[in-house]
Structures are given as C-alpha cells and as structure tokens.
Amino acid sequence: MEKLKRLSRNELKGVIGGVCSSWINVTASCGASYGLCADNYKNDFEKLNKTVKELDKIKC
Image (cartoon, rainbow, N blue to C red; front, side, top):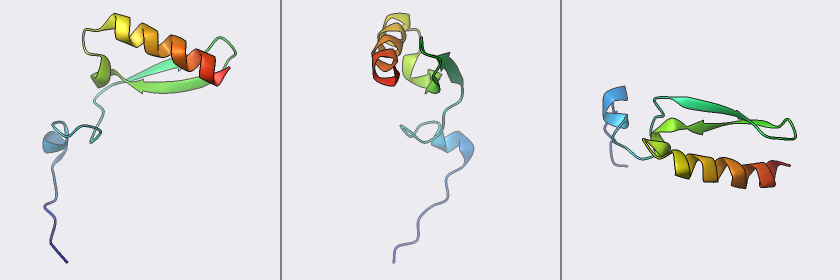
C-alpha cells in the first residue's frame, strides 16, 4: 500500500472540498436549516442567491 502524505490545514485550503474556511448558515422559508461553504461563492452574490433559492425548493 502506498504511503500518503499528510496535508497541513494550509495545504488543504488548495484542495477543492478539502477545508471550508467560512460557513454561511441559511434558514429556508419552511424553517429547515443548512450551511453553505462561503469559499464556493467568493464575490459572487448572484450564484449564492441562486443556490439558496434552489435549495429552498428542495428543502421545503
């Protein structure tokens, strides 16, 4: 079996899905709560808003 390198927290920041530096807590219109990783929406409020609307439909 191959030995895998242990990544530091700083190295994980460069890996997609490795670490989330900040979470956005969202409460859907029906009261369901969930979190979104803010790293996926850097300076893209439109994308975040679209995702929240889509998840609102799914959660409710």
